[in-house]
Image 1 (cartoon, rainbow, N blue to C red):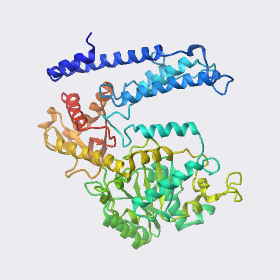
Image 2: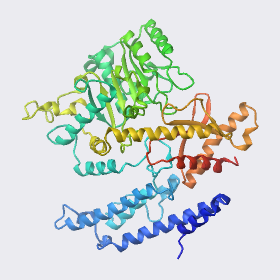
Image 3: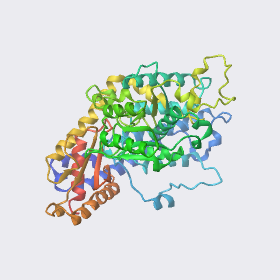
Image 4: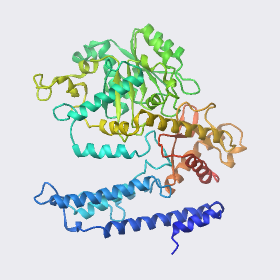
Length: 550
């Protein structure tokens, strides 16, 4: 008997899918329905345990709960493995989109509401399956929406083990192996930056925004250590500098630390989104003339939208001249340091006082995995330590320098290092290099394809510096329209309307945004090593299909 899948392949060979794209979409939905039905049947048929009569109280640590626990976790793993397989299957959707009110009201037995009475394990398994079903497959090769994409199987295994260990990485006594792994990883990262491995310092934190906050906090402490105990009233009016294309977390850090967003000076960028060094120096001089105290400059290595890398060496020269702390936000661009071909783009980063680097972006580690790296050893500890007696006793029977928790502003700290350590074991530095190079090759491929087409316009000329490619799709109705307010207004609406259709059909996902005077444009980013050039071709044609009649 011929299945829908085999029928599709037969007619694809005859070119049917090119004649009728809607027919192909319909057949793909049928295939998905068939696969989901098979999955449900296989899951039910393989079971030997009736979970409809069992509850959480029947699992460990319940007496005789070991077998029930094994069977339940086997079912959960079965669900997860099916999801992993689907994430790499191009015949599946990137997402099955539903509006907030639909999710809130409940879908086909899937309810988000919580009751006072426990529900059985059968319902929990259904909920696990549906949670994944109605989410977004960020590991899908055709998901281009965020900087963090892909699904690294080794990293996934590391995250599972981390959750099983369920420990807090603040003292050696309860997290001995993870503490040592963090030290080893941080040294590797110092070396990639160009710092002596024994002189740097750092800690893994919950995301790039917090890593950037650490950088401002430590920079303020370095210049005015009394701020830690006496507060902002004890210091003059402080000012920091960042590019107009930098991440908003720098302003947030200023707000959180009491410096104030009005004391964050935005520096002009060129057409590629790079900070202009002369503008930076001019702003510094202007600030000093007003009697304010400049203390910190944030340079970005890989801006969120354009993927721009600020001229690090020139900024370092200015920071040395005016004795300012230089931070490099390489949350997105840090992964380039793993590539001999592309690491030269970050020349000058070795002169930074601190660096943010997110392995959960270009290097593909599962969320979250971010590090704040500081060139001067000991500063993090001095800045943040409060010596809580119940945790950081000085008379322990081991070297208490491995009780790293007092470097952090947190107490409880999730173990983000094991998955990254395991990935490094599996790939080696060479494997990460191959992965990074492939992502940038895909970006260059998309750039070259779009440059040759009349229905797309690139936001700026020149090959992408990172894996960001920014462009407009120009539907036929706008191609003959002269430049002006009316054309800009209509072009501004194109990307959101295509994105809405894209999400409702679930075939692919890509982000859009305005930037400065530029109306809404698409931003495609590559960080998923599973993405192929054929997926890039699919994205182009899908945008055309969805936007051709706008």
